Amino acid sequence: MKNPMPSVLLSLLFLAPTLSQAHSPGEHAKVYFKNLKDGQVIHMPYTVKFGIEGYGIVPAGTRDKRRHTAGHHHLLVDHPGNLDLDEPLDHNKNCMHFDQGETEAVLNLPPGKHTLQLLLGDEDHEPTDPPLMSRKITIRVK
Image (cartoon, rainbow, N blue to C red):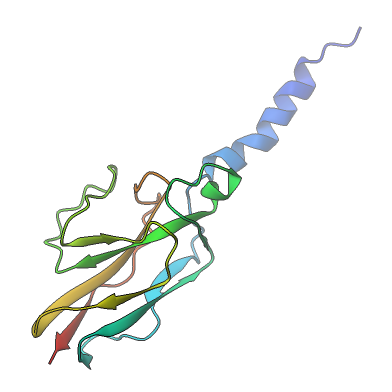
C-alpha cells in the first residue's frame, strides 16, 4: 500500500495560504465614505453612506465561510483614538455597530466639529488583520 502521508502534506500546503488569509483583506481592499469628504459642512439629520471595495459585507455573527472574506461596518464618531485592534470593538457612543450589514446610517449629531472614521469588524466585532479602516475625516454640523 502506498503511504498517504505525502498527499496529506501536499493538501495542507495548498490549504495553508487560504487559512492564513482568513479575515485578512487584500492590500487593495478599502472602506470609505461615499457621500462625505473631509471638511464638509452638513445639516442634521444626514444619511451617511459607507463604501467598501475588495472585501464583502455580512451581518455580525456570520459563521459560514463568508466570514473569512467579509465583515460589517463600525462608525467611529469623535473617537479618542485609543483602539485595541486585537480586541472586539466596544459598544459605546463613539463606536456605532452596524450588525445587520448596513451600508448607510442616519446621523443626528449636535452642531459643531466631529470626526468620523469607518472600521470593518469580523463576526465577533474584532477588526480585520490588517485593519480595514477609512481615513479619519472632520465634518462640521450646522
